[in-house]
Image (cartoon, rainbow, N blue to C red; front, side, top):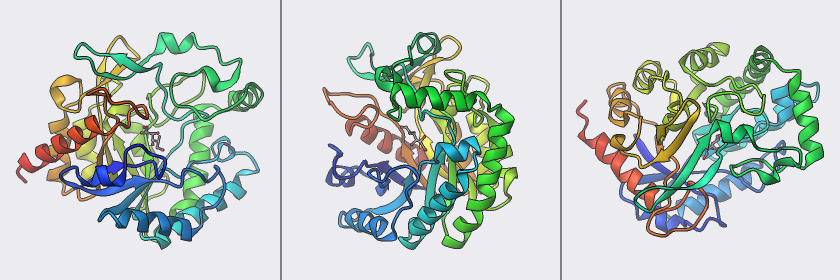
Length: 345
Ligand code: DNO
């Protein structure tokens, strides 16, 4: 296992110098955040980012993410152009020697929360989600009013996108994903890059949009679309853990044994009423994720890939990018590394 941390680039308040000082951290997870979705990445830009990271004695371990254009997910005739661009970006990542590309296949929105600063009894705050609250959000003015992460769409663009998605049943999304992977996986193989799909977060439909990467059956189905080592998974314990019927240790065992987990996101969640959860400190006792069970399954199956503590809480008065402060993620990294060290093979 290689411990990594996400870094948002030069504008991130958390610096590479900070990240390097966290015990056990060897690698960085980052992206070309300034390149518009659908524009092919230049190898030289990925190499520059890699070299900046290397100046701090860290490896550029994972690209998270190359965003997948909506036309691809919708399966429109325009998709081929965007798939070509995605392939070009993957090739550039390979040229720079970055071994893993994380991506997601969520319609319109990426991860979604209804609170960014939910207060906890100990004075910390974290992200949280409540489906009833989500249903009350008014999207008629675009995504501006959303508390969680969302690509910025004005009212007009969002209405058009949601109308296009109304025609898409879950099966149509599977078809477009298969079409995408059939083209991208051979390119990734040739570039020596492993693709790692991120599960949908939360793992259920939001705003009437289909979400398909939600459980073990879905992960199995993704792998069956194109049978290749380059077609793999990001196992995100926080996303999948929002559903009580997802057995995370069993997933780590099953997909770890197949060697198809290329990236680990470790985050703990405390589930509330159905379809509600709050993010909590990484150790198992704070939430519903059996972190030791997950890591033990990975270690017993020889997992050697990158792992990162996913979102942290805000503690010690820190202000910053929701979920991506320094302090709690640093505690998460050392907790996870300690747990890993303690598990005997
Ligand atoms: C949230 C992240 C997600 C993730 C993408 C992967 O903090 O886990 O935004 O990066 O879904 O494509």
